[in-house]
Image 1 (cartoon, helix red, strand yellow):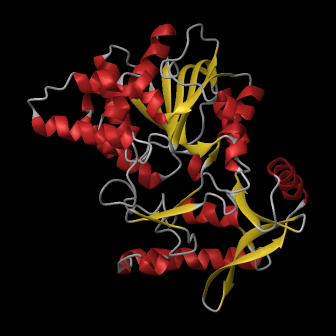
Image 2 (tube, rainbow, N blue to C red):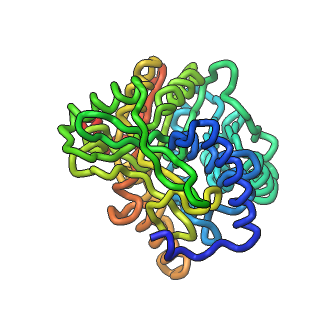
Image 3 (cartoon, helix red, strand yellow):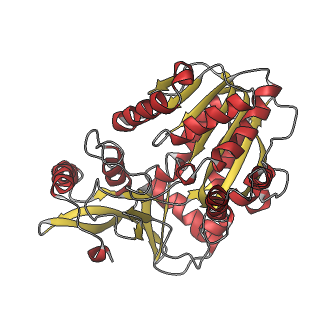
Length: 389
């Protein structure tokens, strides 16, 4: 399938070639078969070379995919209502955004919080990529200069817990995953090797931790032979670290994914890994590493377990469509003058992308957790999917 994709330009291919040299060294150091999560980490985050670190634009019409915030401001305006309700309950607080992408969501969210008279004391952005950080800083300074002083970039979670909101949109899906194959009652780990001048897939026996984890999933899912999938070893630790940031407040994550029974259903025998390049989705993660997004659906059960272990209370789990409706997206649309045909059609198309099952509405889920909040969270009043976790 990847042979049908448009060929990257010479500058981009040169970036990928330099990353390939790094990967070859790591494959050799790993004994010839580099675990997939190590490959994915480098392909996405290797300083100066990985997909999110090399300065090539991955977002919007000129990039490889369009996130909900890049579709327009409706998503941010709805999210602001959920965030504002928590900040008002706390009589103030801080906001921590995880991986702010192009900075579009931060601009639109802060603008709407200002309109709702619910601006946070500080707006932190946790961003590991210097290239992404520069893009965010430029956009916020250009489009929201009056609030730029409230925004601060962090390289690690805040050292002390705070009251407020921690949220991430399409962040967990980019955490590196281990891939495996269940065959004849044994878990084989999928990795990446170098053969005849290029990257190829390799298999090796899984270690004890992988064997135990995959065997448990196989028993629960009643898999047949040659079942392939993945899991994210960092997801529970990552969630626990985010939960530890909150003294009081809300942890909200929005992403595409499933509860564990649906994720590892016997019929989903090829996993969920997907790649994106120039708005085309395909299944070859080895194609021009560093130039395409590599992602996997999120195991929301793992997130719920880790948040619960960290002392947070699960408040809701719903589709993105129902979350946005509960945040009042229909009321925002009703405020638009139908006589302004261009704006009305633009917002209607944006709403369709966010809400319809064939687009983002059902594939994307919202999950919310609280610590020491007395009132229900805005966004989870119309649908309860917690039984699917």
